[in-house]
Image (tube, rainbow, N blue to C red):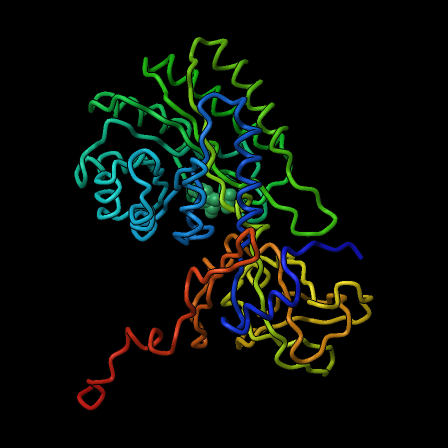
Length: 419
Ligand SMILES: Cc1ncc(COP(=O)(O)O)c(C=O)c1O
């Protein structure tokens, strides 16, 4: 059976568990750094390249600080994420604010921080003007509709709620020019967990072509295009990581073809990836609580879908390693479950593993993005801790686990007699 490597031993994890009980997410700092540098190096051939880390993937200030030091900005989608960026010292045009169905207070905060505001709809031009005032620089999100195929996670663009139609972009930029906006960007985000490099090259081509047309027709100039996030990760052990070089080379060639050839250079090129930046370098660590044998064999863990929702929500594959049994033959077929009263609370269905016993520790791979972040409190489950594993083997808790007091903090029992 194909396997996946771990950056820690069972012994190290037991040392961590002695201070921080399972379940928890652990992030491999060294691997996050190496990967970030690889991305930057590959895209250094692309004009004005910058990555805005999609905060929603892993909204933790320590991770954001590490990425900030690598020169990454923050792609924020809500007030809380804007404040997270601000508190981490990421401000101004190092923030890309890509939201939808946006409330006024979020536009106000984004404007106050000097963030690049990325509008999701043509009606938001006037809404932004009325609520926060139009900034000098505005970006619009394009929904290419039938021009581009989506995929299982993000869906078909024509069915997606995001972005402007092509016609609305022409109308929108014209309107903003009339209203005095001086600087423009163009954004799209049409893929999620996409492993095919050409998909991103094609997206770049569509945006570059559109920039050329919009610039010509409206006599405005664009400062950047943002190709969105969506670069996939090899969740399955037999899958290959996406080649950053192939995307970057394709984007550079498309840039030469559409941007340089139309005298539109310089145009900066941005990405706002989340998953590929931290996903493979985070693990959900959980202890086996019970084994159950009915019509099938179940491994019951102390984590649940509230810690990692992707398998239950999308049927997503996450590789599982039984610590200390890495070399054992996978002889048993299990469903690996959590304790929610939901039958889709399963990390794996019909997964071949070595024989599992109570107390075994499982590492669920590729949980470093859209993992802890998607957590919730259903069934009174408490959100778990996050740990950062340093290069030298030391570790630091970077988010504590919730307590019962946290759970009850928003409830009030004082009025029960009067109701
Ligand atoms: C607007 C936007 N940008 C970036 C991302 C990050 O996507 P990924 O983590 O797949 O790179 C998302 C994900 O939902 C998104 O909605």
